[in-house]
Length: 142
Image (cartoon, rainbow, N blue to C red):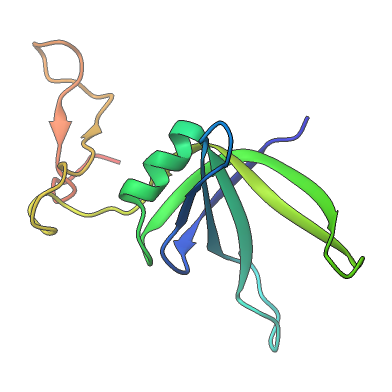
């Protein structure tokens, strides 16, 4: 099984292009993914190359910007090619199959956009549908 889940910040704006021939969208970007444990003198993050295709690429190109935190679900892929001088190049990258926003901004902080995701408790009030919205500032019993 080849499945990768990454969460990190975009190091620069995604590059959105279209293939010649069938005009398929392809977006390339790099994620800075923090290492859980970093030894002194070692990098604190890894910089992972990501490529997205078709609708996912168009979504990334339209909504992702430098510095935002995102989550990517995809697969690791390797490829090789020979340049004009006959030199072989090797690349390992993540092919994004799903892309999500992972920043936790509250509604109204960014001048537009959609509201922040709500949290739902499993301790419902005595009446209702079993779940009720709570805010980050609410005191919880756990």
